[in-house]
Length: 471
Image (cartoon, rainbow, N blue to C red; front, side, top):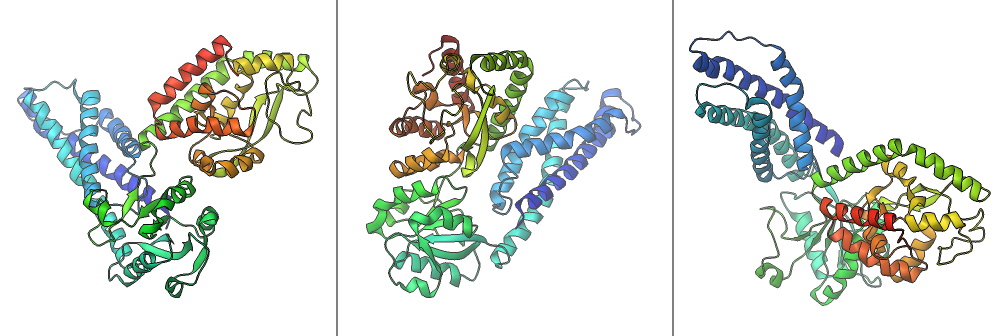
């Protein structure tokens, strides 16, 4: 399955149908509304305004759908949700176009404004939804006929896991689960499930198993007596960009925790892995790029000045870079103004501490005011980092942290940042224990992530820089 190609297919038809809807609406205005305004028939001509609208309006609609998250996961499309989403986005888009492009139209009566809005909404909604319905229906049929499936892993090996595997494999109409195998949560012992599915390993190796088998969904099918292990299992799975579902107990069903999202599918509790809505991700990235460009251009003179001061303060290069681990566990080169003497970590990686002899006099000032971090705006611009996010660490220290706090891997679900809640509340960590202490603030940030929270953290960071209160 090619998600990008399917998303582009939706986007292409959205561009096409938005253009058709705009053309139909233009003809409606010329042949119906304008004669009512002028009192005589108007010749149907297609001028510059029509062609400008035909060029710009469809792109407006595609951008709006993108911000709403419509193009995410195109193969997991619920036709009912698609209908509702298309309905509401059509209302929002039509109103936006009306107030920006059409409100200055002179009409015979204000009621014709309402007719224009209603007509455009009906035409746009119907013309947009028809190809969407056809594409989604084709996808659903392929899923039901097992021509399309999502690589799925079962966690568990006893009765529940066996019953789940049998129900999925024996179903006449597929729900889209392409079972690749199962993992044990305890030491391996022979089970009947091994006659149906390959045994892929143990829960401690779950991340490696997910990557090797290109797993898209995980179903936790453990026994009621093992429910105390769910939190640990979820900690292993949180860093991964996958769908996580759990077989419910009768209590879960009676308490309303189980939401039915498929008439034919197995009833499951779906764990919400979405951190923030799609439009906030897009807005966050736009803010990252905009601020970085402004800083890099407007303060280029300051970069040059600090670089000269670093060179004069001690022998060595003005800039310092080394590998850190970012989103999804991928490493990247982070850039800083050099705040330590050359070969400060010749023997092994070490964290800076208070009155650290490896830090230069100028470096102490830069670390207090966070000036040493300024080159990281380049990292933000190229997409390695964000303005706000958990601070990236070196693999050497991550390995040490994971031994004491396995949930650290959760931070790798988002881009690391120049500043973070942990950095504001705690400052630089001097050892692994302090890193773990700071970790709770970064997890709280991810759980409460929003553009508003980012703004608050940025304001506090600016105050720390201006007051020189950096640790």
